[in-house]
Length: 439
Image 1: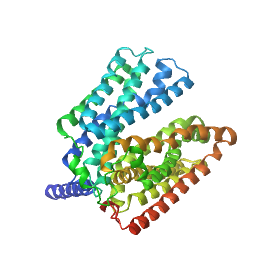
Image 2 (image 1 turned 135 degrees about the horizontal axis):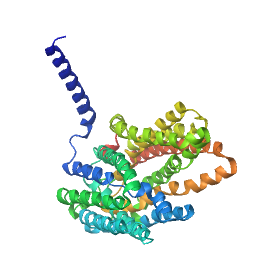
Image 3 (image 1 turned 30 degrees about the vertical axis):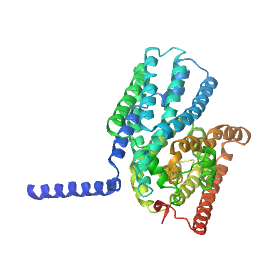
Image 4 (image 1 turned 90 degrees about the vertical axis):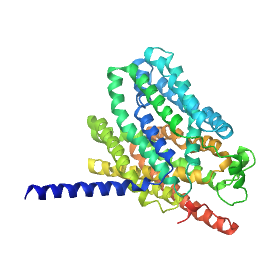
């Protein structure tokens, strides 16, 4: 073959790859420009998530805490988000998203700086708690801003892009964090702070304030949209969205099931594979991360025309099979197959659950709803470890996976039924569902 022919062949290959790449990620075209800025900020911020992946090792190895004390501290961290979320949601709806995000994130990052100068000090956990509080204040504003910038038609695409950005950044950051933890612990904190400062600077410079004006809020009154504004209190607004409340109460059981990938799965890997169990569990987590990065976009594209609630129900089916089969996955092929299945459930759920919630949140209460709903939805995750731990103590590891799979299957079935009931109810009332909820 001549050099010209080889050159043409190579050129054709490059063109084919470029077209394939463009076709795959073309699904993210046409989004509002600030969303691409938020994607970049998410990647930068996630690259710098250094502290939390190594929190338990830091508390026990650097500060000498017992495992029980470290566990109690991690529980307090999860609790401190609650008042932070509530405060942030209220401020975001009243005063706006951008200012709150910038100020709270800068304070959160600044609190990590003294930690780097006092790595072995017992004051560090208190600074971490304060940082987490301000990070919790930021979360409702961040999600409300995403909702403000999107419509039901493109919301899943936007949420999927942010989810992809988080995982891309975290995959890189985890490698850096491992090196820093072993060789430069101070930079675990300083690096985290720098990343947050950089991400906040990007948002501050390029993303406009997105809080809806009073005119925009008033314009939705009487529209029949599931995002129609509500003039009452937060409790009254929540009660006016019964389908959203039931949806959140059902999906909290997905958290109960999914939490086992960090709790019971490593124990099961050790039981099956002995001393190699920890390493094999690590490869499962690597496979999970790779699948999330490479399958998020095509999975979102394949389910884009589905109703979000139906896609979330499908996620439960993947969870049911993926986690339910772990009990007899005593070889690598079966264990990796189960990982693939529950990871698909994670991807489908992550790109649709938030969209359903946003589509059913009144435009007047976006920040406050994003403070309350994660609390309700997180109950399953919170109780999962102690409940399953007691089950393991009483019945052994083999007794874990059938009920865990059954919980996921039941939740999936209930979501499918809820979707049918909601559809009939809206039709009976003569209301127009948002366009993004149509098949």
